[in-house]
Image (cartoon, rainbow, N blue to C red; front, side):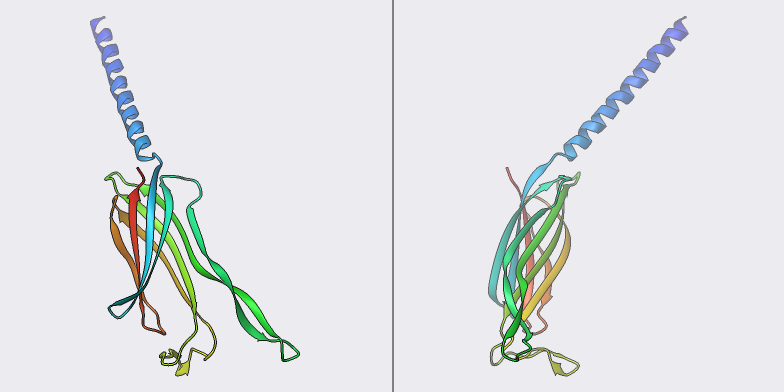
Length: 192
């Protein structure tokens, strides 16, 4: 009888420990999956050599651990771009082109308190070449047609591991026509 009671007590104790461990694990997983608001600042800094010629900041709020739609920002305008001349030879034909910045982001917290941030970034801008610009070439032929707009396009997908308050230079790219360097800097801050 004592052996049976002892076996029952050991079984109850074993199941209790397993149950407590499972509850603790569920609590820790639940805490890690808690939705946390983050402020993400993305800065496009353009340089001509060592001289900064522009800096464009954008801020997007991202909820870490949120399984809903990703955060998004769309900023820009639609610009008419000449695509040809009408059949009468006089009327020009235009097509509207989206110019601006698109940001899409998602984040998840990690066990060590950092955040895995995934950003898709697109930036396009329009400029007209001026006298003295160095034309880029393809197979020896100029890529720039004088008097016409040029659309600069930049796209990047970045996966960053950042802690609260950290800034990281995520991407560096060179414009093939002007030689300007575009640097993408990302800062992550928890919203308190």
